[in-house]
Length: 311
Ligand code: ACO
Image 1 (tube, rainbow, N blue to C red):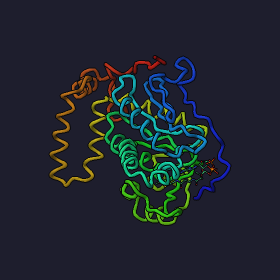
Image 2 (image 1 turned 180 degrees about the vertical axis):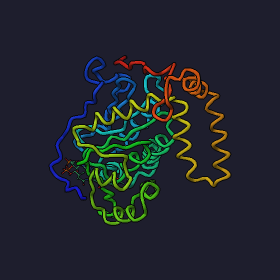
Image 3 (image 1 turned 45 degrees about the vertical axis):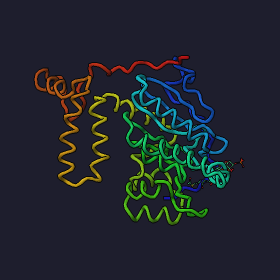
């Protein structure tokens, strides 16, 4: 049940699809503390402070906020994977640079906290494109924000999750307590937040913190497989569906009826696929697919444009 955190291998993160023809990181997404790589419609946005286990400093927050904002409107990007370099997802907020060094600098602290919360929650929670958290190694404290804001999460079975805040003197702040309490049953939330005990990927899946855990060596392939499934769906319908599932949680029944009816109409207004009519035609007239098992054939985006390295 519990993961005993030591001697994690320093796995170098170089996702498939980024190695061969599309090779180098895109130079127009070059940052000091974030690595962005593209391949076959997938953008891999990786925290990049491996020597600090990807602890999140203010500079990292500013860069990730910028990267995610740009990836959201980049036509080459169909799915965004949030992860970390060097074998770890993230060791949470940088206790030195985010906490101690900003104690006496309230202006910078406010700015850094705004950026941190914006990308870890507001941006990812309402992101126009599907997002996947790919977790390996440590996922600690403040990293639960991006973990739970992403639409999907896959972890290595030997990943090490910990709500460590209680172990060093704060509560799980920003939105961590709320995100965790909303994601899992109260007993699990209370147990792990109050005990601060680490748990592994299998336990994270069991309690609903992530979708599933796979052996570490299969993590990238499992992430690509999920991304490819998502890319076969109509982008407009997928976007509306994920937003609907998120937003109805806080609505009462009359509000949900109303919202979902209007959201359904809104899809049609900006849907390049004309999904409703295309899906019906392919099933009823062409008899070319069974909606129970698979999506209709996309006309405009079944082959995501290749995002090669560019200046
Ligand atoms: N903040 C600042 N520095 C960190 C953090 C962090 N959250 N996590 C790791 N580091 C630094 C270490 O200080 C160390 O720096 P140094 O090389 O300059 O000494 C380096 O990263 C490597 O860390 P080690 O502890 O040596 O690595 P190890 O693999 O043995 O342990 C672990 C990794 C388990 C993640 C450990 O560093 C740890 O417990 N870190 C604290 C995690 C934490 O509690 N995060 C805050 C959560 S609360 C919040 O996010 C709001």
